[in-house]
Image 1: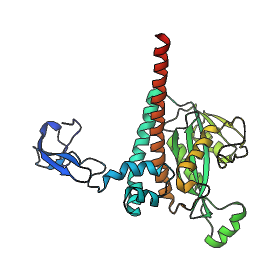
Image 2 (image 1 turned 180 degrees about the vertical axis):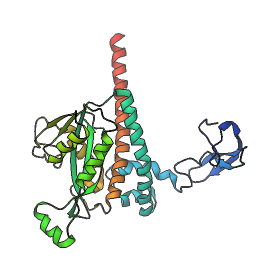
Image 3 (image 1 turned 180 degrees about the horizontal axis):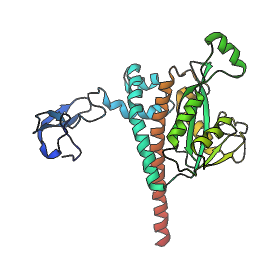
Amino acid sequence: MDVTLRCPRCATAPANLVRDGHYYRADDSKSIQRYQCKDCGKKFSSATHNPAYRQKKRRINSTVRFCLASNMCQRDIAEIVGVDVKTVRSRLVWQAKLSRVKNKLYLQAYLDEYGPIDTVQFDDLVTFEHTKMKPITVPMAVVDGERIPLGFNVASIPAFGLLAAKSREKYGPRVDDSQAAREAVFQELSTVLPPDVRFKTDGHSHYKVLIKQYFPNATHEIFISDRGAVVGQGELKKTRFDELFSINHTFATVRAKINRLNRRTWCTTKDPERLADHIDVFIDVFCDRLKKLSSSVNGLRRQAFVKAIS
C-alpha cells in the first residue's frame, strides 16, 4: 500500500485503511484499487487524489501537453486526439495548474543539485492580443548559459510606433501594467536568487530601478541590443557573440514552439491569462527536454570515461 495514501475525509494513516476490491476504469483500461477507512468508514480509491480525478478522456492529456509546446494550434490538437476544441481549451487551463507546480519543483531540484544561481538574464518579449494595436509584454528571467526560466509574467502595454494613434482612436487609452508585472517577477526572483547575483540586461531604464530595489548588492551589466537576425525572427541577433544569447534564444524558442507567439500567425491570443497558461505548459515541457538532454549527455560522459580508463 502507498505510504502517502490518506483517507480524504479524516486523513487517517495507511495502517487504518483496508483494501475494498477493484473497479475497471474504461477511460484508460486500468484496474483501480478501492479502499475503506476503518476509522470513519469512508470508501475511496487510489484515483481519488489523482489530479485527473473524475476526468473523462484522460488518455489525451500527455499528447495535448506535448502538442501545446510543439507549435500546434488548439484546433489541430483537437483533430489529432479526436475531441472537441473546447476540451483542448479546458485541458490547457488544467495542465497549466499542474505545470506551475512542476516548474517550481524543477527549479528547487536544480538549486539543490547545482547550488545558488550566480548569473541571470532578464528581458521583455512583446506580442499582442487579438490585434497588433493591443500589445502585451512578457517579462522573463532565465539562468545565464542554461536557459532555465526562473519566472515570467504577462501584462498589457499601450500601442507604440505607427499604430499608437490608430490604437487610441479605435480602442481608447490602454493601461500600462508592465511595471507591475516586472515587479511581480522580481518579487518571485528575490525568493530564489542570492543577494549578490549578477544581472545581464539591455538598456531598459526600468530594469536598473528594479535591480536596485530588490537586489541592492547585485551586479548589473548592461548590453546594447543589436540588430535582429532573420533566422531568429528578431530575437536572435546579427552578431558574432551575443552577450544576451540565453534570454534571446529562449524568446526565439518560445516564439517557435507556442503557435500564438509566432511572428506570422492567425492563432492570436484572445485572453492574456491563457497566454500565461500556455507559457507555463511550455516551460514544463521545455524543462523535461532539458532533463532528458542532461541525462543523455551525462551518459555519454560516463561512457567516454569508462572507455578512457579501460
